[in-house]
Amino acid sequence: MTRILLAMLALLSLGALFVAGERVRRPLVRLIRALVMGVVVVVGLIGLGVGITGLEDGSWAVGVVGLAIALLALRFGWTLSRSWRQRRHWSAAALAPDHVPQTRPAPDVAWDRFEAGLDWVARKKARRSRTAIEGFLAEGDSPSLTQNQRALLLSCEKRVPELIATCVARCRNATGRERDRYIDETLKRLNQIGEEAEEARRAVREADDRQLDVLHRYFDGVAPRDGERRL
Image (cartoon, rainbow, N blue to C red):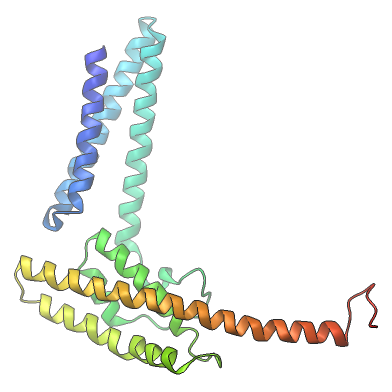
């Protein structure tokens, strides 16, 4: 029985290696997913069988461990399946950043085409940068924008789509190694821009918040709240 449990743990470890391998070998993503789900199913069935056998034989500890492994495998498989399904059907409208409600501009074709050619790890990085950039673009009407922030805003609005469109065009007839290099270098630049955009957005909102606080204090003096008296 101990050998069976060790074998199941080895299979789970193999599944973890497959998941890690997905980050390295983009062309093998689909194969890796199928292998991972296969491992999860096998582990779940073995765990269920060991659990039932242990309970029937009176080996309660083995039975509980087997059933626990089966439940964990079921949960792991359901989580992976849901995650992959969400990534396949994640539309541009579902990507609106939480911190900028109802302010995201219309879907950008260049961004969508760029993300469509990425694996899920690279797509997650791209979306993080995209969210930061679009959050900053949403502050484009702020009166607190400095000259440097306006220059960054213009770059995010005009040059970033040009960057990713050029990357997509260069990847079209590239070899696998060239494509990986184009994407990696572009993601690095997008990450840099995203960090700058997030910092600029934070500074702009803090400046606008100060203006709002001034108005709050003004009206606290003009129209004090209940129970307060002006001296």
